[in-house]
Image (tube, rainbow, N blue to C red; front, side):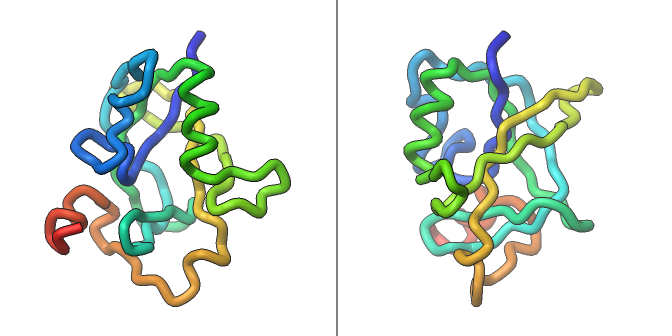
Length: 130
């Protein structure tokens, strides 16, 4: 069974780091949303999980080698001091629940950063020309 990942920022389809560039190719399971607050960090977003807001994204089935590559991209540290922290969330996709990896921004990185009210990085990036 392949692991799943929920992507919400530049890894989404059409994003600067579109997950489709990884090999073996991730398989799109579907679009979804999770509870969280999305922050604008300049060239990319970060999510803080929980709360009443929703963050839009996509769920992909990925190979373990792709998961390792995403950990590098997201600067994950074993002691959770990296830019992002690996988390697990249950995501509803097409009427079924899937356990997914999601990369939550380290709390120190959002100080003074603006909330993306729509919860949609791709729409936000188009609007601001990022």
